[in-house]
Image 1: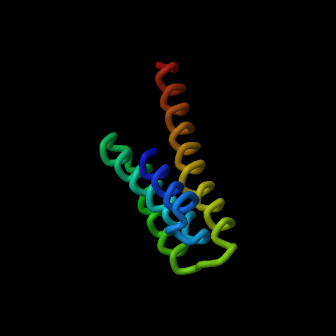
Image 2: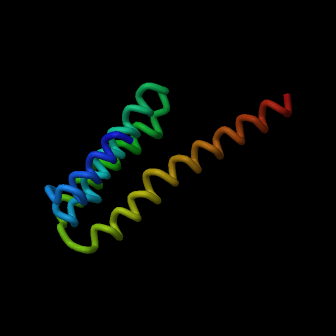
Length: 101
C-alpha cells in the first residue's frame, strides 16, 4: 500500500512520473506484493502472479501510450482476479471433499 501511495503521489502531486508510466509503476508494486505474499504463504499461484505482473510491467514500460490503461486492466483480470478465483475454487473443492469423509 505504501509503494502504491508513493507512486501515485510522485505521479500526480510532484509530476515526476509521466502519466503513461503510472500503470507500469503500479504493476511493479503489485508484482512485488503478490510475489512476497505467494512466497511467504507458500502459495505458488500468487508467486506466479507476481511474475506475471512484472512481465506486464515490462510491457507497459515498453509501450508508452494511452493503451497502457487497457493493458493494465487486462493485467488486473489475469493476475489478480484470475488467481483469486482459481484459489477459491480449489479451496471449495477441498472443503467439499472433506465434508464427504
